[in-house]
Length: 434
Picture 1 (cartoon, rainbow, N blue to C red):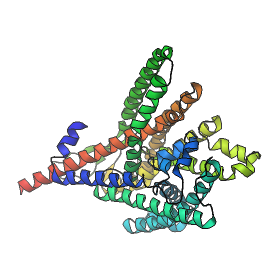
Picture 2 (picture 1 turned 135 degrees about the vertical axis):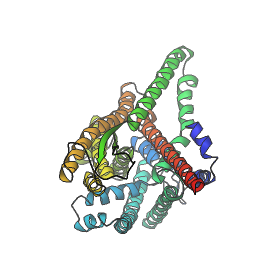
Picture 3 (picture 1 turned 90 degrees about the vertical axis):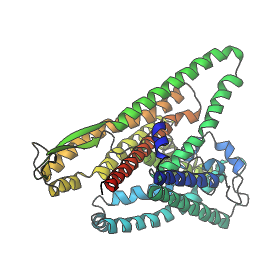
Picture 4 (picture 1 turned 30 degrees about the horizontal axis):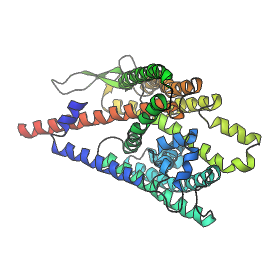
């Protein structure tokens, strides 16, 4: 990794992409510390330990804890993307038609996603602000009124659009997936404070007789992190190679190749999707806490959208598994893969072209996604279970999810840098040949 970064900085074009990405992330981190006017951000200290606050901080890149102009992060955009992609699954014929129109259709779908982001962003912003204002002991909004909530909603929605735009700029002009890179930067920025919290809890605010136990705990925690990093890296890079035969090739060219299918084709997107889906309703429910806290529907929903409960944790894991299968088929698309192979005059040995290839790839993708989804679910749930059993800090509960995001984004960014390096070498070779 470090060698790759060192070599990347030697190439001007790639170096500029890295600097651009770092600049955009710096802009995001600065915006994450600009508090929304008319609110008392210190009031959020009373809800800092609540599960939905930890989840929101992770999805928003730690911008929610300051209730900054970027507090909503990319959450509305993620939710809108999920809805639009689901509607393309033979639900809205127009969306299905656009999905098959290439770049033109993609632009239309992106436009719909932006409009939906606008609506969801405003609704989520107002709901979360009202919920926090009722739940926080000091009161979040200084002068609660309809116009205050509308103004804050507009500011937060605008901030969410800016963050989404920053992510798109990283994707187009920088390196890595912009949305994932923003969440990655937020998690990394919170590591020093998390390490400090663990150190204070286990070495400063404890009796001297408890220090040996703290040393053992820290050692076990470090071992667990190393194991998770190793296992995650292995699974994220694991792939199944499908042999490919070519019917027509240029003389001297190889007649066979292989098609790589990753064990976890969806990457870390399912975890981000699931986190976004479970955090928003959990925060909005706080708006109804005072008036409906004793009612059964409120208790049921509060348990479902709280990942620290048995039902909530199970729901969180089910969301991760479901999104893993869904996004894997979005990424690979067996129908298009079979069509492209047929157009290229290639086929999978012992598999009929066309429909047969589509069914074969779909079956294989289902098997691989089963392993990938179980892996993602376990890594996300194990720290939550450990935190509940041993009464650990709530922030550790999301440690597995955070590690998954950090490792996956780092691996994807490294692969993109490798691709840029290879492309540059190839172009340079062609120029020299001419």
